Amino acid sequence: MSWQSYIDDHLMCDVEGVHLHAAAILGLDGSVWAQSAAFPQFKPEEIANIVKDFDEPGFLAPNGLFLAGAKYMVIQGEPGAVVRGKKAMDHWYSLVSYILDKYRVFTRFLTNSGEWSGGITIKKTGQALIFGIYEEPMTPGQCNMVVEKMGDYLIDQGM
Image 1 (cartoon, one colour):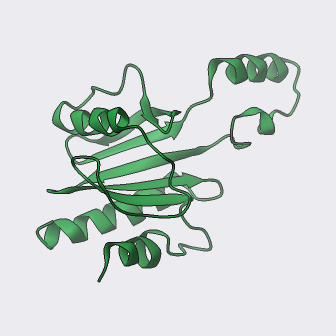
Image 2 (image 1 turned 90 degrees about the horizontal axis):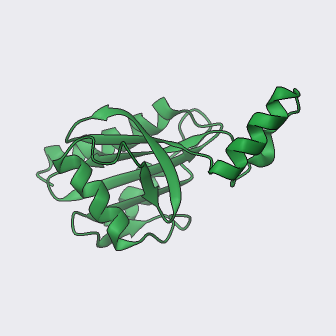
């Protein structure tokens, strides 16, 4: 089975009528083994910081996880095994949202992507990082299940 088929057939699969927005399998050195069409163009230092968080749990928490410039607030994961992040609004949108919310104005479309929610799950194996990026209506739990199941399978295969 090719690495791309792991993306197409497993990570991007339908789960209860929804699927990941984007997925990728990268080597620990940041090399792309396979990715979905929508996986963002990342910077090498972003991957280096993610790998560092697996080695030093909590490294990303103070400033957030960045991928292709998009910021994710790091939320509870499994130190050394799984990093999870929630999409973060930038300061401008947060301020506008706060002000409009004070006046009960519906602000759903004020975030960069037009969504209030979404996030990322990254599972580390012995040789790779498995990325899953989700947006509504997929839930964090559904994303976690897909990404972590693939990661566990690869770990069982010695990868």
